[in-house]
Amino acid sequence: AVRGPFAAVDLGASSGRVMLGLLQDGRVTLEEVHRFANRPVPVLGTLHWDVLGLYRGVLDGLRAAGGAAETATAGLASVGIDSWGVDFALLDADGALLGNPVHYRDARTQGMPAEVEKVLPAAELYAHTGIQRMPINTLYQLTAARSSRQFRAARHLLLVPDLISYWLTGQRGTELTIASTTQLIDPRTRDWSAPVADALGLDLSLFPPLRSPGDPAGELLPGVLAETDLAGRVPVTAVGAHDTASAVVGVPAQGGGFAYIATGTWSLAGVELASPVLTEESRAANFTNELGVDGTVRYLRNIMGLWLLQECLRAWEAEGEPQELAALLESAARVPGLRSVVDAGGAEFLEPGHMPRRIAEACRRSGQPVPRDPAETTRCVLDSLALAHREAVFDARRLSGQEIETVHIVGGGARNALLCQLTADACGLPVVAGPVEAAAYGNVLVQARTAGAVSGPLSALRGLVRSSVRLRQYAPTGDHSLWEQAAARLRGDPPPGGRQ
Ligand code: ADP
Ligand code: LRH
Image (cartoon, rainbow, N blue to C red; front, side):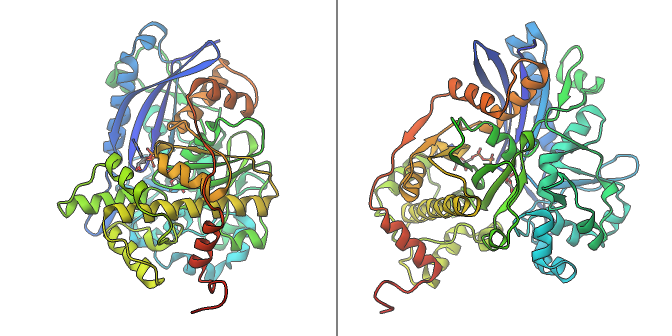
């Protein structure tokens, strides 16, 4: 069997990376061969992704992968691509790109959920798709875009990882896990929802045929081989093309009683299920049923995540007060906890700009102390995130009936010891942190299984991750009831004993 090396292309909202994975002695070694910033670009009032810049990064990464010693001897066994959800490119009849893909944080989706609900009530839409009501969803973006000339000229629609895959191979397909972020898939049939598409007049033939993680997705084109200095035939394998799907494959859980929190730009907190939860209660709790690898459902809530901190850092830098992350987190750890919390799931924080000010305003509005400096603001962000993690983990348990013994934190936030400890404290559960690059592990392992280098169900893949990485454990500390009080404060419940 081929043991690798496998190249995992993982495009996050804040950075893209190409990792090289090799299976050796029951372990996966993962090497970062290239990382590049993902910087959105505002053009004439619309926020875009620099998708050609990202593709350049992918090519440079594949070239670096080709230069690695393992590849020089064995050749590159395969390539897999995952990226953030919901965004897409429109192509004309010749397959040429029509404009730069629009960023999900662009304001064009404002009011679109309400627009859609005029023709398809929220309860019906949820019963068909099980997807959380978030303005960023592809469905709402399509509603905003559909009357444009560009959209009318489009003959193909490719989600971001499928676009990268198309450019690398010339083959068009729609990978299932990323397709489920469109809000156009029925999680029961794991196929397109004709009732939803019909109600909204959307032509599903814009999407190329569905493929599942593990399916072949073409081979690198000769031009790509030349550009990257790779030799031989290099297959591309469909992986969990949604980064969160790959990250959940990479959760090093043992047994089934776990919740996961994939923390990067977003925090995705929930549980893995065998079938979707489409109840009215689940809709009211704004839980989503995204599709996972091997027939699983990712039952989770999207939470604003470390975006809140990224945007604060950006604002402080622009104001001439740049902060160093490690030092900032150290001072935040010394600030008294839970003085003020904001709703880290709130759509009010979705768009870019002025984050410290928006956080201060949210504190003021809810009658809580306003953070006075970067350390206090950071503490407010991390307390708020931990609280949102707790609410999501508890709601996932309540709504799905799944037992939870351990909470796994993966993604960039696993590096943030304060966030991990606060999450353990807030949930009153042990937290296991790592790996940071869970999406790349999941991506590599699905490729490796297709190549025959590993076999077995997700539990076997997770066992491999467990033996390959150093994990950090956080036991819950502190007075658990303080978190319940903070949650009540945020809900606007009267304090015990009545309002003063
Ligand atoms: P994405 O995949 O959405 O681009 P990542 O999973 O790469 O995001 O996570 C990025 C986040 O991880 C950063 O915004 C930062 O908050 C956090 N992070 C990265 N490195 C560190 C570190 N050394 N200490 C604390 N937090 C970190
Ligand atoms: C995380 C993520 C998340 C989505 C968001 C758009 O990177 O894929 O699961 O909802 O980006």
